[in-house]
Amino acid sequence: MFDEVLGLPAHPLLVHAAVVFVPLFVAAAVVYVLVPFTRRWITWAVVGLAVVTPFAAWFTTLSGNTFRNKLISQGLAQEVLVKIDEHRSFGDRTLWAVLALAVVTVAVVLVQQFWAAGTGPGKLVVTIVLSVVVLALSGVSLYYVFKTGDSGSRIVWGS
Image (tube, rainbow, N blue to C red):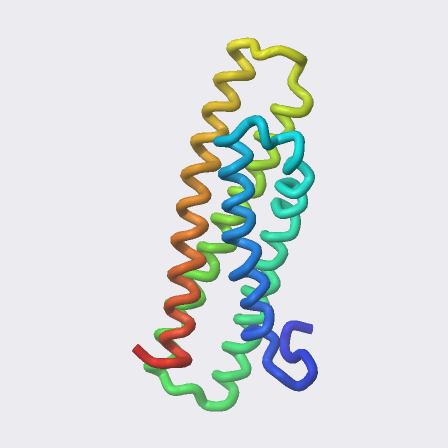
């Protein structure tokens, strides 16, 4: 399933979904936590991206593993395999960072949408803590999506 699309390797095609969705999700999550008056307009977009983005990262990871195995079966050189494994490691970290960001972002949305009306100290503290975690995970997600893309492009296009 994650091998080819119309005769082309699926991984280079699916990579574009992660490259688009991860930064878009990060931007939406950051705006959601830092600009409260936008929440009523972007809540569904944030939740939608929280669902779609981890799947985009996961499908990209699965297709990358399939592509790696195909290259190994075709006699991939060991020095290239080392670079691919480093790229793969960054991709795995991207997946986990985005998944964690999705969970915490949905938690912030749930707190904002379903906590009893008002701004009691409990809701405020929880919102601040979750928002700080969203910001941290956003930075981690952007870092790893960059490192994954950079290491993959260096494999293909050279240093």
